[in-house]
Amino acid sequence: MILMKDIVREGHPALRTRAQEVTFPLSEEDRKLASDMLEYLINSQDPEIAEKYGLRSGIGLAANQVNSLKRMFALHLEDDKGELLSFVAVNPKIVSHSVEKTYIPSGEGCLSVDRQVPGYVPRYARITAKFFTIDGEEKKLRLKGLPAIAFQHELDHLNGVMFYDHINKENPFAEIPDSCPLE
Ligand SMILES: O=C(O)C[C@@H](Cc1ccccc1)[C@H](O)SCc1ccccc1
Ligand code: NI
Image (cartoon, rainbow, N blue to C red):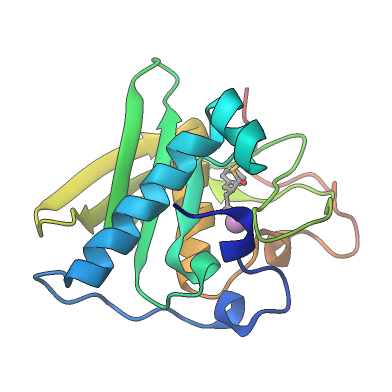
């Protein structure tokens, strides 16, 4: 199982390196990595397991964060209708997005960042995402709200981008044009 010691932190080169596309069929190693990443998120959201193993709660985890430069990330969260979104996205892309932006008023955090970095992180409010499942099936999802934000946060990791790269350096809480805060 993935533990906090397996998650690389700021300063590790993997967090600033673009991950490489995965080829199908996935190797046994890649399938295990995908399964372990999703398992981490599920474990981290279980209070007993999280306390027992000292896991920070996460709704997303990208391969770069466990020092693997493969274009894969896991998401495990409920959408605003209470539907569970739980999958590993392989070779994910945003194929279209709204002009309107959104942001979390309390800012974003990251399992690879052991500090608070205050400020608004502008994200597209709605996205159409395409990715492959670990079995090579192509999926197309329209996301909004926290799922859309999480997808963008994780896709950033695959491109070596950290959430605070998007924060206005002059004024971290400057109004974001054409945006609506996450409810
Ligand atoms: O480090 C990661 O990639 C996991 C991030 C993902 C994330 C951050 C901000 C906004 C959306 C996703 C977080 O640690 S997950 C923790 C979390 C939990 C609930 C809501 C927001 C963030
Ligand atoms: Ni992160």
